[in-house]
Length: 223
Image 1 (tube, rainbow, N blue to C red):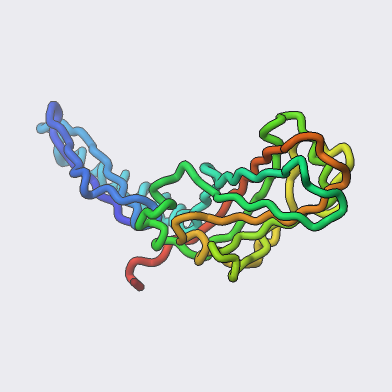
Image 2 (image 1 turned 120 degrees about the horizontal axis):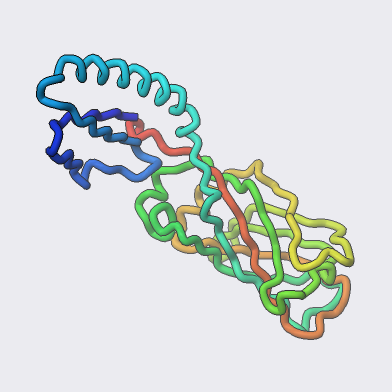
């Protein structure tokens, strides 16, 4: 983490080049512009020194927290479908492609190679259409993250013994022991849900799976 202090006189402008700004999870650079009067330079420099020492202490304390980036503010969402023809009591599957609004970290961005140790930290399934679809019509489900040809798959979430009156939203039980780096670095995130119906659905049900992840930035000095 770098700290840069820019000192300028009153009525002058502090210009920070745009090419000095880095996207997390590389380095964090903080620029501070302090305005001083020409006649009080010595006093201002003393104040700057005190300010720098305080900021350095705070930043060092925060560095540990900055090393673990939580990618949960912008979740991954995957649409899944249960057809009206789905049979009760059988093991069925639904496949969808996950997407995120975070185009900087994911979706072919080079920053995806600057993170590792990706794990799921939350997973939620909800009805999208019809919005009042009761997920209690599902008896159980398992969610996998897979490769395009499904030769590689990792279990990320499950839900057994779903309540008959579960409602339109259920939280899933996580399997966050697996590292998901190899899947996250693909252009598309393929999600496969294996499920069993408790009762027959009367019409096609569209569901939305939402997952949040954590990741650790790769140390650029080791690359």
